Length: 357
Image (cartoon, rainbow, N blue to C red; front, side, top):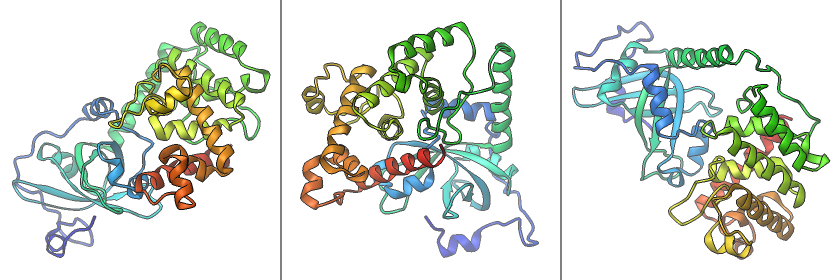
């Protein structure tokens, strides 16, 4: 998105010697970091979904809630509306986005001009190409949210002083280690019992992977309870081994499909971790697609069949999303925006996991 010429001319800059002006608007009190964090949890924000991923297919991302981080590079407003130019942090393309800020959130922007902020935003309908229409839900200072997150970590450490600060590392090409997904696993009896039990159910080839994959999955979806995460981890490793699928590819697919939410469902009827359609689930012998073990059995089995048919990860993922018939019809990845964006996301995640091992 870009500012119009008129809007650019009306921007108020605090740079290059220009005087910063405080707009005389009836702004409400700034949102606190705690309020922002509460809304982030309430709206089920996908914190691993980047703006660059959204640009790959804005229309298919409608409804998703993301977190943007960056500096305010410019702003303009009236008594009825307020717009900022946010220079995104960690953007390989040096993206800047034009955001309409709710008036009850403007005080944060007004007080933190040229300082890093976090923005909670929902992708709205009407996206096309790489234009991502966003509705701002909340704004907070980067430093304030970061401080709260650090305090939470310290609080957990005080409550559980016997937690280990180490995560088991395994050999190359075996565990996901993408930055930001790992979190500490407490050395408590319930965790030790869970690990011991699940490892006893896994073969020698994969049982050493249980702990790092459990940490990964808990980090990817913070809403999971320990037992559910343990069930998902066991199923993912067991069926990846059974069907000879790289567990990192299975992880990438499940993140793209449901972000490890076993209760996920789509408007089209897709269900569970691997978003199985009713007909596909039935053909795979899955009677309850919302059961993590049944779903992983069916999803990874189905992925194996796509790999066998096409012998290529990108084509297999395209077939998983759009069907084998569509891939054969077009002699490659079908020209569907949703499918192309899906393939890019899965392959990108898979490559990152492989490169960061």
